[in-house]
Length: 250
Image (cartoon, rainbow, N blue to C red):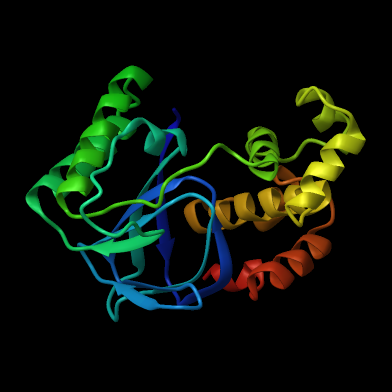
């Protein structure tokens, strides 16, 4: 299991379409407001509240600064295997994402994980803290949809995410998965995607995170995500998320 802490900061309103969530996400809003929509429902996450998202979701996201301060949120991202480890009660309808109010158990367990990540504690210790957070989510009534074994696209996505700037080719990925290129392409086609599509999704999702959580120049972010041309990167980013990378900075 891998776990990471991401801190999001925005001085002006951000609107992004179909943002992919590859990990299990628990985020707490520190200032401002986050709004989300999935085509069926829309919800707002206010200061002190939590957003919980299961892996594989695509959500339209809007981050709104407060009148006197930037938008701020802290996000704990955990690999999807963590959901498979816990036995969730069946006393409530499972959901793909949820907005939860603060509570003593949730506040303390989230802070416990956050502090451990800031202090760079050993992974074995962080695992126990994440389990504590899951128990607090359970007490808050959160029930995730049942997780299934990773599909082929997800297996490819996890490998690509380790080195998104590598000059990936389908044959190299097929070799890592111990199958022929034809088999890889056939399996991805059965999931209505392709190697190039998954690669671009991973690269642009990584770029979106870096833009929101770091002060790296956009040219450097483009390079780190496998785009040698900043203009092509900006065009592909806008096509994917409905906004230019530069519009998320300010």
